[in-house]
Length: 297
Image 1: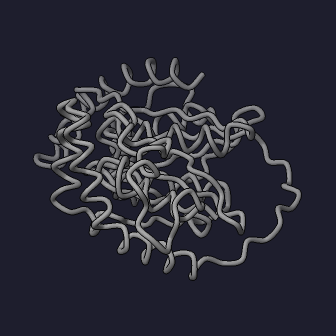
Image 2: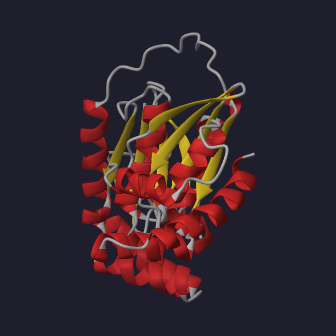
């Protein structure tokens, strides 16, 4: 099972909890300063690491433990990661998200800001160490509860071979993502007319985020459409790091469709508000079809 400890920055409370879980820190006493500082990730991550699921280690039962700095994007990250899990048959049952933010105190916030944001490492680290030691017993109790509820890990079995997969993310423009998926499985040999694009837009708008849809096969690959509320690079980076760590060996290709086509957007708005806008939808479809075909082929 995958256990992801997450907090805002991903470099203090989540790192400490993950380190306790895998035995890098004791769970029965408050560690010394040098034990915390010697952790590979404690107070060392940068803003560029935000959103990445970083592997910390395995516990004694084989559960894989990660830390994650998710900023304000946790729900979107969780939707995207569990959507990929469902594509591979895990259904989200193999991944547990554990929030450590309730244990973050004022000293940890202040020290983290001074150290990681302003670059005053010496001063900031002294403050964050004091706050971390004050929060340690609470984090240790959290980890104990998590571990007590984890299942006994079964020995790994032989995985059945699966065909390579292409996952098309319908991000800010879901209708564009759906168009890309239809082009990939050769359901669209020409730009859709305004009426069909209107039907596709209505369908895409009502899809729940994080619920993947199998579109068909493109040559030897299975194609899935994953509607997501991806609005920033943080979520996309998190999804990429998860796919690279877990599914790269299964030839998983991730295609984010984040481009917004102005004519399609305007056409959808006019159709929704004024029941007119067919020309914009048709013109936008012709432009989008050409660009999206280049993306997915």
